[in-house]
Length: 94
Length: 494
Image 1 (cartoon, rainbow over the protein chains, first blue to last red):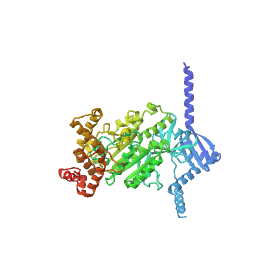
Image 2: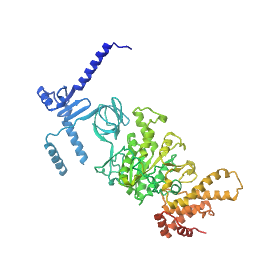
Image 3: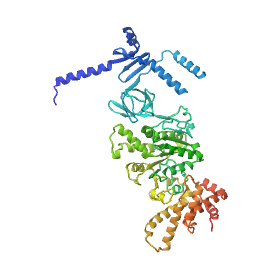
Image 4: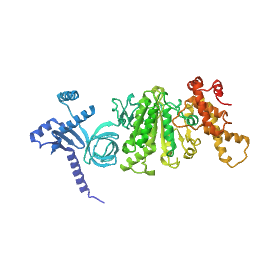
């Protein structure tokens, strides 16, 4: 099958853009929708967030704190995780 | 309350530390759960052989990395894992906790307690998968490992650091030989590891009971992944046992590991591979089934003096079907090991126990390790038996034989009787040497074949009680001289 080179070029740039977009999208999970001020503080404190598009998700199950996700990487700052860790420590000590 | 107070104190201390930073983690989501295997998405930067931790607390071991998916075998209960569950990489490789305290324990392949006692507390871990010692770190096999079984010590001697396969049909006494060898290591400064793979729990329990009753548990570790354990654990069991053995070997000790049995291990690996959709080869085994066993058995070795001089002797067991030693897995393992002990159903049924097929059994390196005393008496034995086998087959049709042949047949029949041995009754070197000496010197030629067993029992009893000094001398010097022979002669009835 022959593809129009013009079309091929367009497709390539489109895919490139999409890929870099997904790279730039960072999901922040919190228990309530974050305000602009909160997001700004977050951006200031987490260098990774500086030039990325932040997607705010709400999940009450994390109990408190934040989870920052980008690609397959995650920074878990939630209360749920702290409690899980505590559970593990208590379980292991006994 | 005391414990709780301690926790609270610890937690407050932890909270008080400011600026605690969280590391970035690798995470993935479970997309599929199959028998003991999970397939995940994400985990872009995970490495092969890494441990990942599930939300439910289970850990899994990455053994499959494809372009966009990760396959991992679950170490333990996989039924609690849901689709969509999160998993995170830990950056650790699979390892077992080791210390001197694991002696006498019953453990699972990851070193977790199976005997109701507490888990071993140690900060020393040995990796399950380790590249075997290289050429310069090794030494050739030179010290014998006495199995306590006359037929083996005389005809297919095993040396420390050797890999000797025990192969035979079901119910031919493969495990018995291995267990007897463990029993005989009492006081020999050898650490034994019995690794049960895919066996019935009842059988493992019976084995442990036997070991305990004979006082062999003091220097033995039992590693068990039974038939009801997930295939993933059965797959890991021999590597776990090997890692524990390496700990003791690195301390300069001699270790004996029995892998009972590797055919079930190959089955477990086949199951895992097929679930991971790896291409199947002959008998549906994956392509790397040879490497599966070669990398395991290559870890058995004798280290050079520079490395401490420790050793791992491996006694892998393979079960054949209908005596077919040319099936896929048996030929593989035969070619990997330094010899094999072939057990025969027909011999077993004819009452020759241990049912060792002397013609097919070989030991490729053990000859260098055989003690001088045994060499002195067994050299003749091998010849006698070989001639006997040749003659016996065609002498059946001849009615009148010349006296020379008659003598040969007579001798052969007696030697076959002598090599019989009751199970769980290992002999010391001196006892083995004494009875084989009596047979190969022709002292028993006039005795009826069915009287040999009673004679042997009395002979050994007499020697144990009335010729202690001679026996200890043979045991320590590992040589039999004319003086010893004179003593032995006194115990032979005219």
